Amino acid sequence: MLEEPNAQDRRQAILDVVATGEVRTQHQLQQALERRGVVTTQATLSRDLVRLGVGKLRGRYCPPESSTRSDASLDRVAIDVRPAVLGFDPCGPNLILVRTVPGQAQSVGVDIDAQNEPAIAGTVAGDDTLFLATRDASDQAQALRSLESWYGAPHRRP
Image (cartoon, rainbow, N blue to C red; front, side):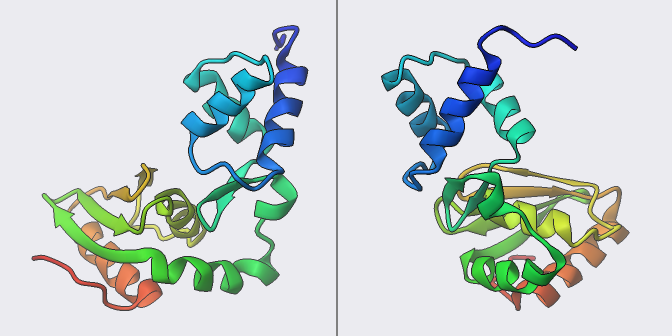
């Protein structure tokens, strides 16, 4: 697959900006890149972040070596995000809404995905809200039990 000519330069600029540890949102990252003369769309930026392995730690984007989770670091990361979970609510038979403190939904989503819970089909994260998809009501019930196990028993509306 061919990459556009400036992809490497753009990706290096992304790594340089996130290394500052000051970027919390893709919009902030996009603005910082523009100040460096790198103009990109949000979709391209999102794909670059995935390709580079850039993640969020404590609500800030960080370079891959800072956000990589080895088996030894799983417990440490889980402890870091556990207080970020404010609660979760079932939404119909296939969704669960997870509320987090601002800037932490993506980190919590990464933590949930790392658990490899078969009842959870996938996650979609925003800034302070995360949706978990389940295949049916039975999987939703199991996912809620797992969430309670991982994060304690945050407030939950029936």
